[in-house]
Image 1 (cartoon, rainbow, N blue to C red):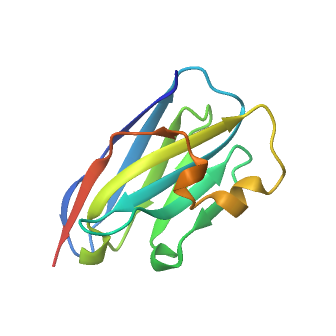
Image 2 (cartoon, one colour):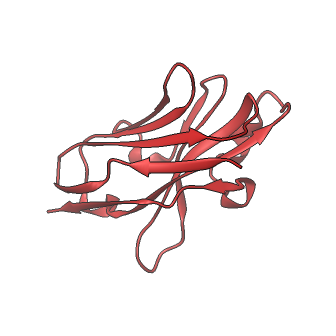
Length: 131
């Protein structure tokens, strides 16, 4: 069974930075899509950024230039570096993953922000940005 455990959330003032981490463990395949999602109270869960095992990334427009998704060399930890945080970034942040024996070259780029495509989710970490 695959486990995803997020950490790094907290409370910051507008303009501040945080780095979220997601530790991945369990039986995985070498091909995957991973993503960061967020959900604010009363709103639907939305994709923030995605990455695949080749390191290709996707980022939603509202965080471009401010958030960076990355993974460590052994691909056991996913990161979301967040800069210039705004109050509208306040949400519960989740990491998600889906693993494959093989996948099409650009599959993750097409599905990265679709919650239905992921079958493993972390428990979430809260990010609160005050003005």
